[in-house]
Every structure is written in structure tokens, then in C-alpha cells.
Image (cartoon, rainbow, N blue to C red; front, side):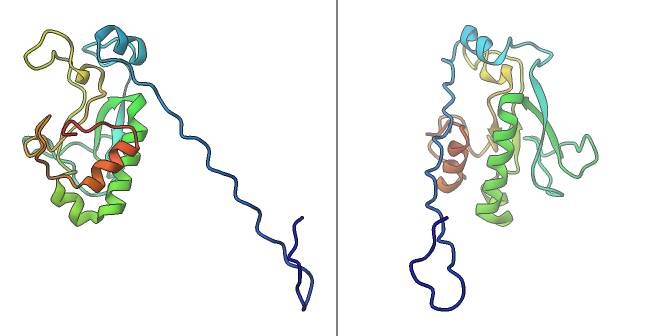
Length: 175
């Protein structure tokens, strides 16, 4: 054990060990956005939503709203609203939401519109295209899309909150 060099009264005190450097973050190489590559990585897209899990909106008693203003459902009675997304993004999404709430506080969280859920799983083709949308796998998450349209640089979200989403592996449609 490492000990301090001098301790005039009492037994020597241990010296704090040198901290080990943090482990390198796990980097997940996401597939190219093609049906074949997405099927290989996430499983085949299907109208029934294979690979989907229920995601708990991580704020107890704060309602998650759909784009038409209706409350989302608390499917299992635990006071958290529920929706479905792919199992590979459920935990990172929940963790990102928790961190955004903790960082912004509930007032800013609502002001920025993080509580307005606009969709995740939706088996459909891309707008104006014939290939499947990433929503068909339940891996694209739209949050408050009426005020934050895809590919728009105008957003209600703070850079601070978007940075948190990106830290958890999500890409911003506005960036």
C-alpha cells in the first residue's frame, strides 16, 4: 500500500491511488442508410415491428404528447408514458432524455419541446422516395417536429441538449 511520507500524529494514512484512465468509449459503426445494410444491422423491417420494445418516457408524471396533442399512454401503470422504438436505441434514448432533463431542468425541458413526441416506429417509405424510411426499423426519433422540421437549422432545442443526444449516439437532423 502507498503511504504518506510523514504523519506526525497517529498511524500513516493511505495515499489515494492514481486513477486509472477512463476506458475508451465503445464506438458502434452504424450501417449505411440502405435497406440491405439496415436489415443486416437491425433485423428486417416489417409492418409488425420486429425488434421493437416499449420505451418508458423517463419523467414520472410528466406527460408525453403526440404531435396532435393527445397524451401518450401509460401502458403498464407505472406513471411513465410509453412508446415503441428499436431495442438497440431504447436504453440510449432513455438515458439521453434523463440527462437532458437533469441538465435543463423541467421548465427548460418543456420550453424546448422535448416532451412533444412526434414518432419513432412507422413502417413507410421515405418522403418523396421509394426506399424504406429509417422509421420502418424504429430507429428514427422525431421530437417536436412541428417546430423542429427535419433538415432545418431553426430549432427550439439548445445546443446543450443536442450535444447530449449526440453524446448518446443520436444524430441531429438539423446538424
